[in-house]
Length: 274
Image (cartoon, rainbow, N blue to C red; front, top):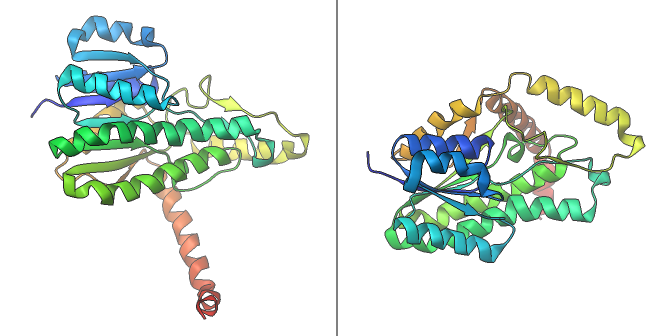
């Protein structure tokens, strides 16, 4: 198997760290970004020059371009670009402040967009490459108390599907990875929470209970690494792939309801046509 060069954002923990380790373990090279690169010190000590730690806040567009260039300068090419950096913003829609809403979109959408834009010239020139966008089952469906997170992932899904058609002729693949619940820190210390409104107390309790039931069997982030390697090594990788047992069930139920509603209201659609 030909050695690959990876660029992975948000590599300090969770999926990013596990995927960085998996790539290094099989002999690939990785440019791994984190807000605090000291979280990568143990990997740097173990894997040496195969790992390039880069300090990066993906919200900084100029820094994104500089980091991607540094990775290309170091390794001479880029094969797999993983936009993993992001976080979950909790809060009912009415509860969100402007800063919270903008922060979620800045990181989860624009952060991925800037890194993607920075990498594309290199991928186009070499006529190959694979962009992995870490989305969520929340990019397919939507749930109470994470509405702005859903909005960020739906935006990521939209521009990434369009991107896939734009770069196909250059030999570049795009894959949206859509995990369900995993044993990461996504809903823990890395998450942000809006100030709660008392009016939503009962609805919020119900949403929390539904979420706990929905994701009662979280997936193993370490196990996800072998799944990702299968995706990046595939001759024809998918545009979308679920990670975990539950997302397919959620998506099927959601789309069955959508199709039924669209069919029911098709006479109104035809009336609107004129």
